[in-house]
Image (cartoon, rainbow, N blue to C red; front, top):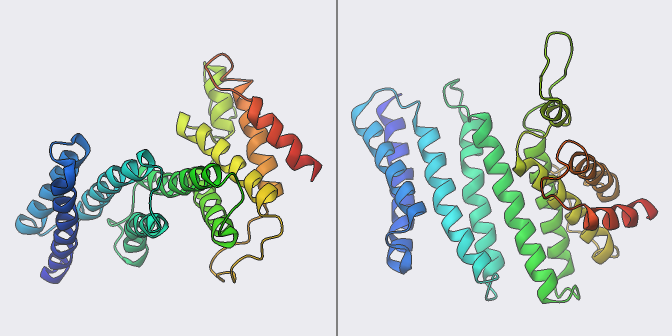
Length: 272
């Protein structure tokens, strides 16, 4: 990578370091997540200063972004998204979490591609953040939403990110060449469920579809972004909740996953 490329990564690391320092001074000193972010930033600085090959830069930058935003996100969730500026803070975190994907998409280099696990995590974190924001605001306002159009957009964006997370990897097609001794694992992989987070994403996605139809039915949405696909809340909600119930009462039966609420929402969606 040319010197100009190293300088760009160093500038990005510097901006993240400034944000990290503000969090440290604001009460985060000694926090394990922030210490982990600091280590990633130091490694990024070292790569930019000492190596011609900067292929690890995107991975290190992404890790620092994930750690710093995770710390800030936890503060917002723990404080239940306080103040009138909480939505702006959410949007700022979403923008930060979108930056690694944007940098990867703009690059022509094959070695600046995000790992699948990192892609999944970036999608999940954005979707889960919007889920927590909508859940908190909805409960606080007793679903008598003060700004239903913005709430509707948050739901749509959150569902979009969760679907991207769930579709980052394709389901495993089992055949004579691919087999598993553990039939439960095989059944999960066939459904595209690779971790507990995937199970949770199914539930979050279905719940957001339910909220959209139950509480935002008459909302006139913001003018659609031509880049943003239209979300069919009923169809998506039924599909993900059916999958959730199927895996929780099938291969994950007895492992603590409840389906009671999912079944109630599923019945509501199917009757729409």
